[in-house]
Image (cartoon, rainbow, N blue to C red; front, side):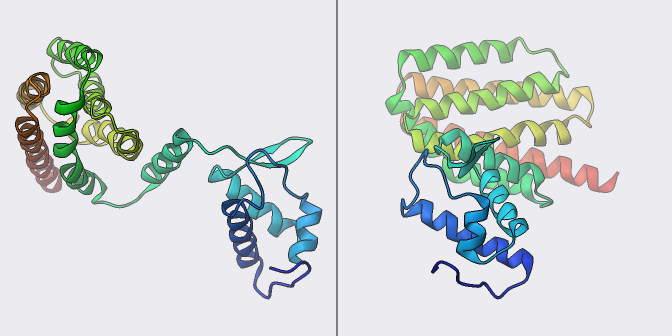
Length: 248
């Protein structure tokens, strides 16, 4: 957009246009990582816009992690990180009002995790095995009815299997999904009696042990199968509890 070009839109749309323009400038490296951006007044001149519109655009860019605003200094292009990307996805999932988010999360895991387990069997290290074994020991010692601890260990198990696969991109993609495990399990399973929780814990231990043994012996097909079975069981339990909640 040429300097001084007037944007013929309402205030909210103007800030969105400025937002997109600055984001595109960062993508094409017009502004490099760590570089200071023009001041608010300079952006006002560039886009023939009010300071309010410019400030709204900069705040959105900051929220998305594209820029950082230093008090008394100005706005700078932020250094993007995998953690920043995961934080944004975590925020989206936490704020989502999708009633089917929990179920869709399970279905998404079914797409990816069996193959992740297979790759873990092929690529795991001795350190990976030690960490998974420690996780299993903690799960076996988990107190009955301690949903929070059980959920934490379940999530950590799947994180460790993913790390064992040796693919940094898969780890970034899956981390926000694994973070949802805690929210959904405590929300659904915490409402039910000790007996059902105890039986579910025993099944979780059995599935995790079978997955671990397949990874230990480098049996990728068995690891794929056991993870698939585990997630099918997760889906079944989720639907059962969802129906119970619906009729209560």
